[in-house]
Each structure stands twice: as C-alpha cells, then as structure tokens.
Length: 473
Image (cartoon, rainbow, N blue to C red; front, side):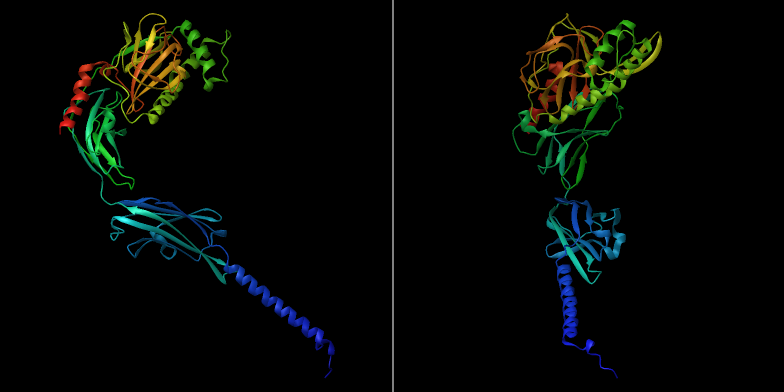
C-alpha cells in the first residue's frame, strides 16, 4: 500500500477543516437569515370598523409566487375565536389569484354562520405563513383590526302626518331615527332623499328628530313605492312606511320649430364656450346639416352632461335651512313655458328631437334685473352649456335654485345672498330663443316644480304645520 503524504499532510487537513467550517457557517448563516425573513404581506380590506347582521370579509396576501403553507382568518371576541377562513377549508371563501404574487380572499358571513357573535368589541385577525430556505423554514405574519359588532337594526318611525305629493312636486316629513350615526331619509323608488337634523329647521328637542324634503319626480310612476329608510355604518338597515297621497298633474306637450336663424345664433356661441366642443369649427361656411348635428348634440348629450353637473352641486348642500318664507317669482314676469313640458323639435317640418323642459321660462323685459328667489349661498356662477350664463344658489338641506340664460352675472361662487338681492341680468345665452329667465328649483339635484315654493299656503301646510306639530309632541 502506497502512503501518499499529499492526502494526509497538515495543510490538507486544515483545508478540509476550513471547508467544513465554511459550509457549516454558511448553513447556519442561511438558517438564521431565513429565520428573520418577513412573512407574507397581509392587508385586511374589510371589515375595518363594523360588523353587522351581514358582513363581508376580504383580505389580500402578497408573497413570492403566491406560495403559502398556511393562511387563516378569524374573529376574536370575549376570549373566543370564530373562524372566517382557513387554507385547509378553502370552500368557505373565494380565493382569487390577482397576480403572480398576490391573492385575494373573500367571503360573506352573517348571524346564521356566526351565531356566537354578540354586540360589542371584537378583532379580526389574519395569519399567513410562507416557506423560506427551500421549505426548511417558515415565515409568518399576522395582521389584525379592531371592529365593533352591531347587530340591532336602526329604529325608525314617522312623526308628521298628512303627506300630499303632487306628481313632479315636493313634500316634507318629520321622523325619528336612532342611533344618531345612521344614514336616513326618504326613498322614492330607486332614489334617496337624505334626512337632516331637525335642529337645522329650527325644531329643538331630542337629537333623534330628522326632517327630509322628497319628491315624486315627473319621470316616476304614480305608484312608485315611497318609504323611510335608515342604515347604520355596520350595514344594518330598516325601513318604515308612512301615510301619503299622490296627485296626478298634467304635463304639457309642445312642438317647437327650429329655424336656420336660431341655429346660427345659438350653436356658435355654445361651441365657443364649451370645452366638450373645442374641436368643432363653426363659421360662415358651416352647412345647415352640420349646424343641425351640432345642435342635436347640444340639445341631447350636452344637456345630459349639464344636468349631471347641476345635480352634483347637491352633495355640498348646507345641513340647515338658509331660506325663510316663500320664494319670489321674477317680478312682473310672464310664464312662457312650464315645468316638465314635453317638447318635440321640428326642422323643416320633420321631427328631429324630443326633450323635457325642467323649469319655468319667465319673460319680463330685456336685461331685466334677476334677483335671488330666497337667501342662500351661491355654489355656481359661470357659463354652463345649454344654460348659458348660470347661477345656482344653495338654500340648505338639498334645496337649490337655478337661474339660466343670463346676460351678465353679478355674484361669485361662495357669495352669501339675501332674498331679492340682484344676481345678474336676464338674457339669451345658451339655448335660449329670446331674452328670458329659465328658473328651476332642485331637490337633491333633481328638478321639482317651482310653483309650490312660490306659494306661502303650500309652505304653511306642507312644512310649517308639521314642524309646529312635531314641536308640540
């Protein structure tokens, strides 16, 4: 046997030892580093504040290649744990892989699936574990959010009586609702009219009193369901019926011929003032057919956009009344067109369009002073498409008035105005056939007939009487 000293020399033994130590050291280092690895990134999307009679759990988990060893979610309350989701029982929830490294877990739960939950404080906890170091180690993370369990629906009851609703008109109700943080109001079909603290209408008393103006709109059926609604932040909801009567109102129909002269006057002005039409060129070479096409866009699509712009101002309404007494009609004015008139437009004796006119056209004298119908805050004072120079005044609790086709505007946005204060001069800007004021009343951005708001008897019977009776009760 040959004794090869090359393999048994001290140098070789030291080299082998260093190699072994290096490997062991690297292994230990990798093991330690793996032990410090972060677990999956977990975000609880909902619930974040409340759990109601019905609730929805949703969370996202981000981890490399969406690899997980374990994932579970549960609700902790009074020392007990109630499961929401487990990776081992995935059928209890929906799992969606949104990207290579991101998962979304969601499920609904309610009193039947979690009968042990009671009203009070609770915590939603999600724990996730992923493999690290080729599966030899694990990294776990936990995310939790404190919530409140609310299981009782809001309490809701009408207080006022004798609700008479004219089709296209407004009504008023006083009611009670609790607790104080719920959203409530009147639902008319698929449209909601929020309620406001009754103190904003001058009615003092308990803080569970609310008031709401609502409407059966001109385009809703006379049999449309009308009821009070309330829902709390946990999603618990309730409704309550109240007594009312609906009265049908006639809406006129008219046929309006479009002249070449009218198109040549209104179309170029609107095109030059509306950004939506910035690419259009209108001059003496524009043909009659092109003018008509532009007019039909203005009278249809631009009208729809302008109405939506007007409706959006309702979101910033004051939560108390800014007005007092009946609204004022334009002095010495003649009504040229009424509310919800159905108009058929004719060009060269052929029908080209149909629209509904949602205001009153009031004619006086050219450049007549236009005054605020009641006190409030100006929320818009600028050019607005079909309305031309336009002013919108907020009167609080979702009630606003609109003044259109003005020759000039004398107020600015944010200005507080008093009833009868001049806000501009009448004119024929926008889609106006002549010098007049287009006046509209809006409730939560939806047009209602102005005639009721001009009538002190209507205000006394529909509004003031109910406030007095509620105060006495």
